[in-house]
Image 1: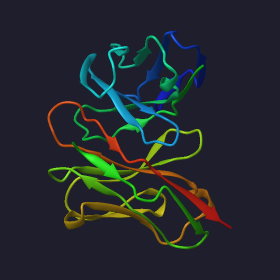
Image 2: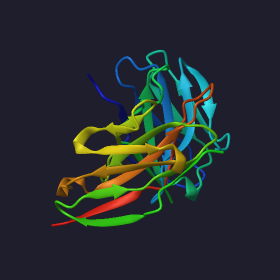
Image 3: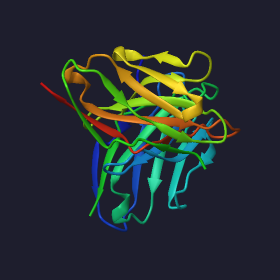
Length: 113
Length: 115
């Protein structure tokens, strides 16, 4: 069974640029959630996708957007990067009715300079 | 709004000593409760979860947690820690409502083990 994978591992971008982060779900999982973890903080919920539809969103601006594909993999896109976007971005996959049993990937470390 | 408080930012214990990490939550009803562990540079690994029933739950790596409704707490315990337990520990709640199953995390407790 393949776990949750994310790419790239690390990324350095300049303020104002755009970035795309990718996530492959654990086999059989149809729900993907994205979290932002700033240094020294707990993860914060960005949004969730269930069967290719956004299923809920946290307190993040519209420049944070996402997609989920028919194979349930997902992308997180961030436009107009700001310095405060520097963080570890975590993807978690689950079954839609699994009552929060979310399995996390290793994350993508984004640095904005 | 739901929230999670982990009062201890950093705890140091000696190898072989017992451990208790505190977690308090604020929510109108009993949420689903979780403990995750994060090693440096890694993602989150689920240690244990509470949904209902027995208030003492067992997890992986010898950890257990006790749900106390009257105190809105879900403290994590281990009778004897190992050097490999050094990591960041996060308590999280999952509010029970229709829609997204988002987890709300505490700030985390960093655990250091003295040899």
